[in-house]
Amino acid sequence: MKQFSEATRVQMPAMVHLTRLGYKYFGKLSEDMSGIVYDGDTNILLQVFETQFKKLNPGHEGEYIQVLKDIRKELNDDDLGHGFYNRLKGVSPIKLIDYDNIGNNTFHFTAEFTCKNGQDEFRPDITLFVNGLPLCFVEVKKPNNHGGMVAESSRMNRERFPNKKFRRFINITQLMIFSNNQEYDNESRVPIQGAFYCCTSKSKAFFNVFREADKGFVAGYPYKVVSDSTEKQILQHRNCVVIKNLPEYNTNKDVNTPTNRILTSMLCKERFLFLLRYGFAYVDRKIELEDGSKTTQLEKHVMRYQQLFASFAIRKKLNNGVKSGIIWHTQGSGKTALAYYSVRSLTDFYA
Image (cartoon, rainbow, N blue to C red; front, side, top):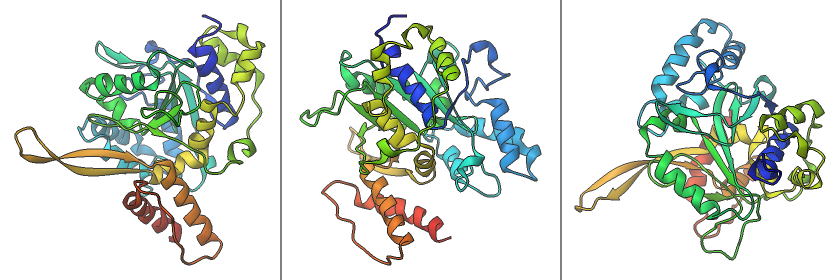
């Protein structure tokens, strides 16, 4: 293991940072654990999923095997995971996530967890689980990597999304975050460095930049203390315990690095569950084919940061007794999308 690689500069510090956010390091997952610790078809953590399913669904404990079978079937559909997402955001009669009581859920992460179907495979740098479901992955690169994030975007759009053998893994993944631990370049017409996020796509995923609206949120977040034993276990994952006391590594662990900031902003438990419940939309977009005929193409959209913070602002005002107000938009910031997301969010708010 090189002392100064993407693993030591970004991946390991990011994993340690996730423990500050309350995620538990699951440990190393190898291929010989398939069918025992995790389901090789979906990468669902079997024991965690079973335990949490029974906990969240009293009276339905015996249904978890059938639900797991149904999930496998849904994830094989060519629908960008629409059927699975409807199940994921549902709360009755069966729920996979307790959105109202965060503490009833379990949050885990691991590194280098292979998504494999036959001879085809890819290996996200960090995979995050809620109740055993692999709902997010994070890809990291070292600063000034060749091609920047454009190279990562191209790999997703050309190699992973179109490959039908990866369909189950892509369909279950709700959120993807990409970072080379550099600040976003506002002067660049094509963003090639920084931290970005997207959701799944059939053709080309749009990489969104994230800007934190609450300037004190990252610095003031109630982080948990990093366990020394857990940190050593994480470093052992990539055989780099030797870096633990190096100044550069400790600098990269800081909560204010670009990678760690976006992890706090998007993956702290409260916001991640809000995004999972309200932050995704499926749209049938009309497109024109080369022969002039028209058809529709299913797209999956994820909230942009403007819409996320507008949603929070609406709820905050309503909590304070404000009955009406105006949201000021810039052109192209997604007014229609915000209206759609808000209907779902406010329906539950008033319920």
